[in-house]
Image (cartoon, rainbow, N blue to C red; front, top):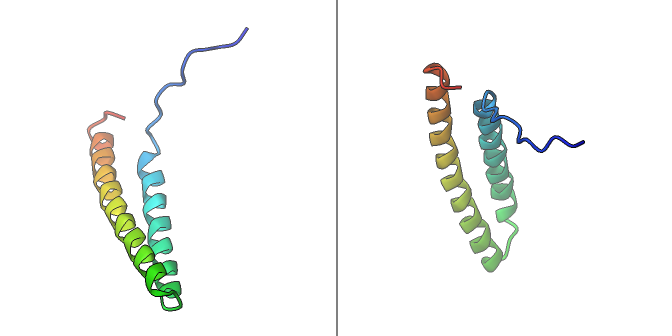
Length: 77
């Protein structure tokens, strides 16, 4: 007999997970900045565009961190 009930929503460690994701994304940006100097014009443009999207993702993750931390402080988690 299989339990088909969904697992409860455990958001208790979301802040930490999001912080790890931000740190990993920052490291990816830094690594790509090191390789961009060896890239051709087209590759350089693609890397810059990807880094721009990464920066936008970081902003969104930081906003979500604030929301999660606020929820945690107010006892909603």
